[in-house]
Image (cartoon, rainbow over the protein chains, first blue to last red):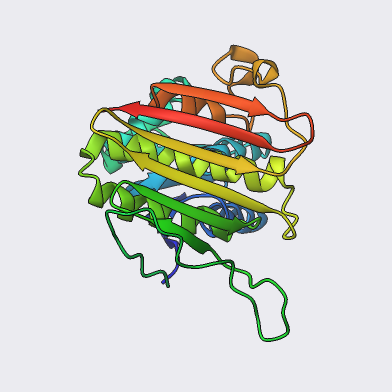
Length: 115
Length: 169
């Protein structure tokens, strides 16, 4: 079983990636990087990561979130985060990244924020 | 797969495995397991991080570590082993990373040793400073310090770095 499972769906012009598993050094981080690169190549620049199923992330995974955020921003797009687990929220708080990312608990609210 | 035995006595029961042609096998080598201690020797590859995490999970279950402390210990060990593999041994599989987990009534002690050239921990930038927040790396030591009660490094002049971390119960 893959360390990180990513399912893509379209909600209007926003691409939602439903993620489950771990974003850790190696397979998990690479899977996220590959998915984001592919979306950018396809011209999909409004991306919402649904992290409800991500139970674990390490510093490499956090770095990959930052890298994705920067790459999408440079391409004129927006990366937003949805449904953080408490642990992930705690990690983003202590690293001060919660002030960087646009984070939502409601998918409808997250989708509306792109308009 | 590892099948750790537990015993009240310290007993080394398995040496580094060798392949049929005499070379070292790629994979974790469990050196010692007692009720209170686990020692593991790991090859310098990314897969060793997951192997270390699996050993830590088994150790914490045996040592009756609470959920919150377990999360922090798991995180700190993953980050320390990642640093040892990547920055210490530079993924040179001729070198190993040695992990020791010790449980006492007062604390859990974790020691990670690599065979790299060492570094100065005081020179590691603070990842929460504004100029570093959007950096894509450099948070591992910050997490180790955040989740453990004590973190210290011993850099040996002849090479090799040992990080010792303590989590009080």
